[in-house]
Image 1 (cartoon, rainbow, N blue to C red):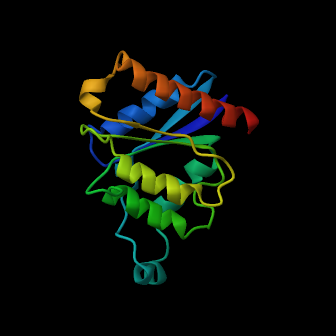
Image 2: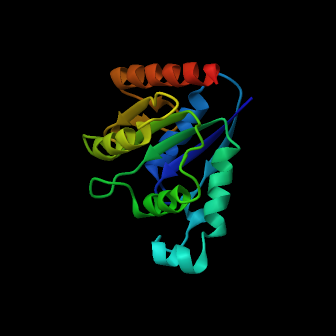
Image 3: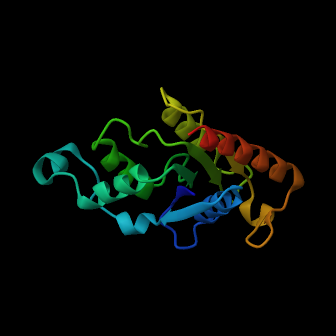
Length: 181
């Protein structure tokens, strides 16, 4: 059984990225335990070096990092706010990055994004893929789903045939990486 940590990188209670990340994790063909990390459970002060030096690293950063460390892989779907990471995700990312240099604990990552727009969060996806892939142990498969409300149904999954084919190909790539691990 593979332990998959799912992160919908948004603080919205109705996060479409969280829905997509969970859908992707459930699409993996082998037996999985899915751990859904809600960013709201890891709310911390805004990262600053001064705060880190005066108060130390918050326990919630260590807790988040432990969940990653204890997993076999990550499914991360990024919401896009003004072309970048959400503030909630960026703050957690900043805090866990000071715990150790290997931010994602050398775990296989499936990187996703979606939005209700035609680009599907491609800007943040490209930024994250470029950043996370630098000197990373594994290739990082990635997929962007545009027009979420038009192209996704919670019961049927990805409705557009071509997009679903692309998504399934990315899932296969991710499964191949998991099989090697």
